[in-house]
Image 1 (cartoon, rainbow, N blue to C red):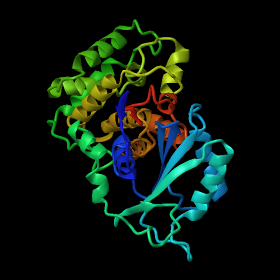
Image 2 (tube, one colour; image 1 turned 180 degrees about the vertical axis):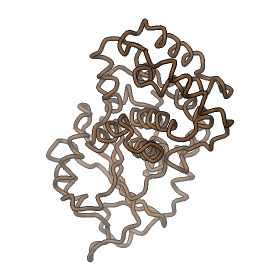
Image 3 (cartoon, rainbow, N blue to C red; image 1 turned 90 degrees about the vertical axis):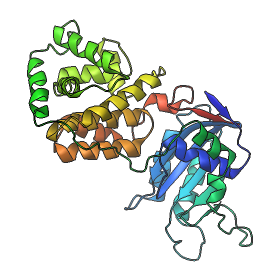
Length: 347
């Protein structure tokens, strides 16, 4: 786990978007603390409907309490919403509810900041003389921001990548032919030649940029549900017992994934999308959303699920994964700094 020294609020505010992979908008950002060290990070949309502050705070606190070593929380309020009434800070009803519920759970908010498009300030400051917005350049120019950029960390400009189709007119036929060859694969018999073929081909392709024929073959494997499920699970675990497979799919495994393999799988899927036309893209978008969810990037996951349903309305796997996401489910590995993706420890 990488260790970074944070000496200013700007350092913390610079790190959080890099952990997410994008700049949050109209969001609450929270990071648990384990003494002086950073624990897990959570971003959640600021409610726009009739969710009561108390209910919202209870749900949020239940997630943060799963970091059993946490003893405090840092809060970030990302919004351009104007305050309602005379209070100078927006969404104060939700923030106060969070303060009460987190305190009750033994996780007091140690500090908090308001970040807008115009600047940032201490959220809990009550002195008008010192509560003025400070320039966002202080965040961008912070030591941690410079470090993250230097190490190659880049924030997304769009939540879900959607490469344009560059394949030939034959690409769809090639994908369909591969899927047809897999029709008789025995779902849970991983000695079945179809499973063996697909798993070997996928393993060989990781870290490469296949040509159209190979790309269509790989995309074709994903059109067969039993093979697709096996390839999805392989990203996290090669286990072949049903209990582990089920736990992998639902994010209940606690062992640290091979994150380099996850990144390589994501890169391969994006490459395959360029050779995959029409409704067949749904399987790839759904897979990408699931990987993003495992990485703790629920907003990115939701964007990929949306794309999957746009190209194939009613896509079964996407609907199931999206329901899990909407219910607030979080993968177990993301709740532990030792197993979470791109874990960074602040001191």
